[in-house]
Amino acid sequence: MFLRRFLPDRFTCALVVTVVLASVLPCRGTAASVFNVITDLAIALLFFLHGAKLSREAVVAGMTHWRLHLTVLASTFVLFPLLGIVLRPLLSPLVTPALYLGVLFLCTLPSTVQSSIAFTSMARGNIPAAICAASASSLLGIFITPLLVGVMLQSHGQGGMSWDAIGAIVLQLLAPFVAGQVAQRWIGAWVQRNRAMLSYVDQGSILLVVYTAFSAAVLQGLWKQTPLPVLGGLLIVNAVLLAVALLVTRYGARALGFNREDEITIVFCGSKKSLASGVPMAKVLFAGHPMGTIVLPIMLFHQIQLMTCAVLARRYAARPVEVRAQREVVEAS
Image (cartoon, rainbow, N blue to C red; front, side, top):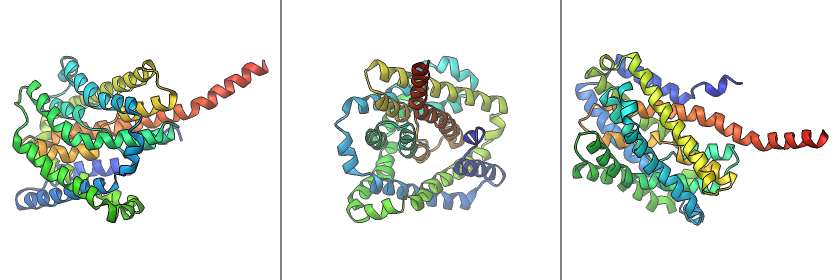
């Protein structure tokens, strides 16, 4: 049971298999063009379904807890980008410049929705606030992430974000999302009933992007440019970013006077980065860049955050029981 919590889930295994497949059998030529079209359609469908799933009632109901939501958004869109820039002299020597560009992109991404809520629930946190905070982060990320990417690119010496890229975000991500919100009154109930089935759309679109991205990167010599020591360095970089974010959100929430349930929500919503949003956004924002090095940090961070937060959520959930047990021992003595 102890070892099982550290084992990768099926989706992570599928990601690994996809990377291996792209490394052995990369798509090229006409096949690559076909896969790119299919991937674009899958991404549009993904954001359409995200719009149809996002409950406006849940968002409105949770918006009254504005201090918590501002704290989560500050962690997601201010703390992480600052860490990426401030820690660059310390962390960038561990990886290649192309990989650290992927790390900077990781720092601009919104929080996850499903896992943030799931871990908050497991740890007995403020679930309605988690639903609102994670949903708001995902929605605002469509606007904020491209702007932050422009700033990050300038800090990395690669120029700002073009209007073409911003237009592509609006057309490929925001427009389907808004269409999903409009269609929610007709298909929202069906989407909620079939969330388990529709999760395959989320995962399938990510796998498609990963396959096409790594196929192109392998053809450009990704693995020759990324030896095992560099992959180890990337693991350290991601672990440092997550550890700092967890510590700042935990003790920052306490310093700001939040109760235990709100602290749990801030920790799990403010320390996450969304693979589901990040991979499609990378395809749009980094057209012309070596995509494999952009999405590799996100994929690795995804697994690290799941493993770490699973253990942390169990510790949060067990703490009240431990406190009661200690009180009983003191009273008995």
